[in-house]
Length: 216
Image 1 (tube, rainbow, N blue to C red):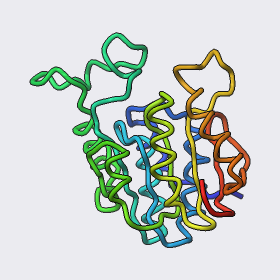
Image 2: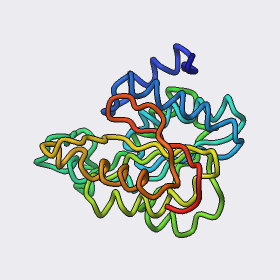
Image 3: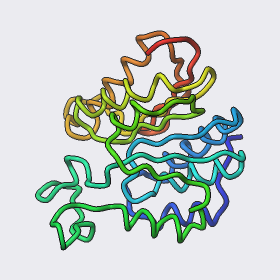
């Protein structure tokens, strides 16, 4: 039976701002618990307000490791003013731009998980270039353009350890979902085609792949 988060962890997840459904969150948590057994960091690309970070942090705490989450905190394309997923509460009134960092910090504090997370504020490709160690899990949940999805895949997939997991969110095969899931779908197909990853059963739009070979 898959590992499940504590009730208080699940409650914190459900209370946090974000878009991940509960069933996908439970699948992410189970993957994080499994990957945590490698004793390596669990890394997330795309923090937003910390909804999924809660699950990775709790799994990391249980495994005696740490969750690392990478985001510039200015919001992805679909979260900008005028777009469907824009939240005006997350706009910094002084600079007039999105700033999800304060909300993220409040989310972690409320969940009691601040000591189990390293938050890296920066753009994913820049951080990936200076990252120097393997990780047990990479969770790709950043920008939904091909440019951003490919950068996240090429920057972070090489760091997934043998037996570790590559998890991709918002994978929607239907072309009608061009702005929500086609770019993640394309990197998911690329990961399978390269021969380095083997698929684990999917949940909703969440795809879990295990590293079973070299390369990307």
